[in-house]
Length: 161
Image 1 (tube, rainbow, N blue to C red):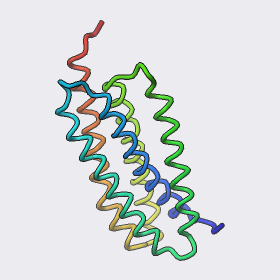
Image 2: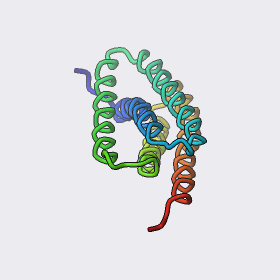
Image 3: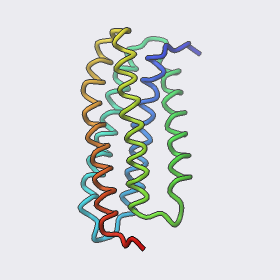
Image 4: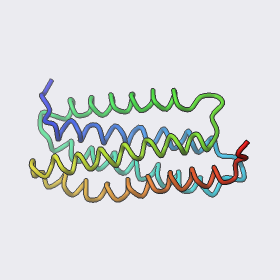
């Protein structure tokens, strides 16, 4: 298998996180109660943007001759780790607030990964990665703020007892 640079590894990781985010937002949406559906639209938008992020990452990966398989494996491994974390954090007794708290952690991780990719690429100078990170980072920051706001909304309607 091809040896990946740090930047290529991070590209695989952000792609895997986008894949995992699609699963997570679907699961959290299913935890919403009927009177919490105002948050469903946000989750659907996050899901669609994660799918678009995955697609855009793959477009970049397709240009990296001899690296596609290794980056794809990195993405799948990251997605699997995300799925395991989701399974551990959200059990049978979890509710929508638990789901949004998980999304807050996950989105913070995604923001961090995109910032690292952007910094690694500052030296590597791959124009496609630069454009991708400039597009994705504000979206991830918005997702983090949305997850935080959703957590606060759900906490405000929960009994403190």
